[in-house]
Image 1 (cartoon, rainbow, N blue to C red):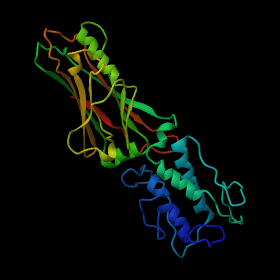
Image 2: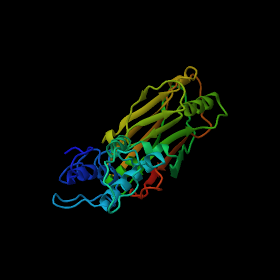
Image 3: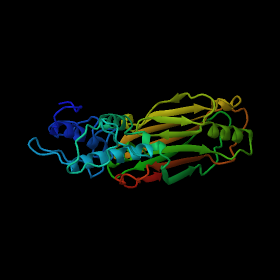
Image 4: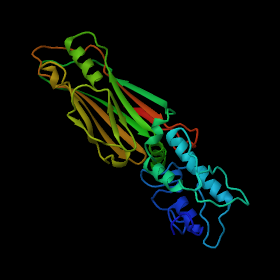
Length: 315
């Protein structure tokens, strides 16, 4: 049955909005529980206050409709920072269903759910409520010193560990993301200054639920794959790579690259700084290269923190 003006009010209409199916079973579609509850894949925030389906022979009361519209309002509030006003076919606002009230067709329930479904994973990051709750910095303990033509590689290893795969999904699905940045003090030898420039040229690199975001960088990327939670590889695979393309010869042969791998509840990032310049003299890097990893979680004004706290470790 299609929810429309003049149609008979059936349990089908309510259940489809609540669960995605007329019989009340869960489906991966534009419905409240798929976004608000456990969901699957890129959908689901892990909230416990899902909407209960009604039986075929049961009545749909005003309280059920109020719960349904309240959940949709909370979803859109989390995604956009403001809720939604439901309107009936006469153009009036529908904020509460009460006994003895005339039953109007609410014209924008379906469109609100479709928009919420489209925005389920990404829109919450634009609300201004994102909070960085963990920052880890890892720097080279020794200078990247090399003599003449030998290649020196420095490796950073960063693990982001969640309590479970479900917790990891809820973190990213609700709008959380990881952000990486690099720095080196721009002083000392010419090579040190070239590495400092490369660190700055990387800008900020974000790993999210449905996209990688590269911002504030200079020059071009040798590799900048769009890896994110839903397509992250199981074994270490190059995520991005950048040469010192704004540097002078031979320093433009130096590069930094990162691999990513996802296992049960864990994201592993390995970052390599490779000094491959074919120097004709011994040129030492005098300052440490710093890698900064930050964990940003979505605000909890409208949802509960179902993902717990990720553990960030380095080695």
